[in-house]
Length: 100
Image (cartoon, rainbow, N blue to C red; front, side, top):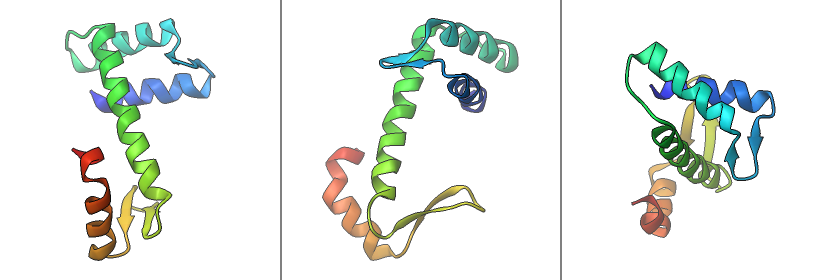
């Protein structure tokens, strides 16, 4: 479901259908339709909105990591990479409250 939802968001983001406080209303309608059709689940705009907020939270955490020395992005594996265990340990110690 996340993949379908993210694909929908990317499609509409590329069209410029995001406003200052979130997505334009027709994006939610399209997202509900796509998830219902492709995943055969009952879902509402509130579910989509909630998941979008979770995505935003995860994005902000990862973006913060990428701006921290010792973190980078592995383009081949499409995931976050950490230079060493000590970099991770320091990050967790400093940001434990934000992560959990």
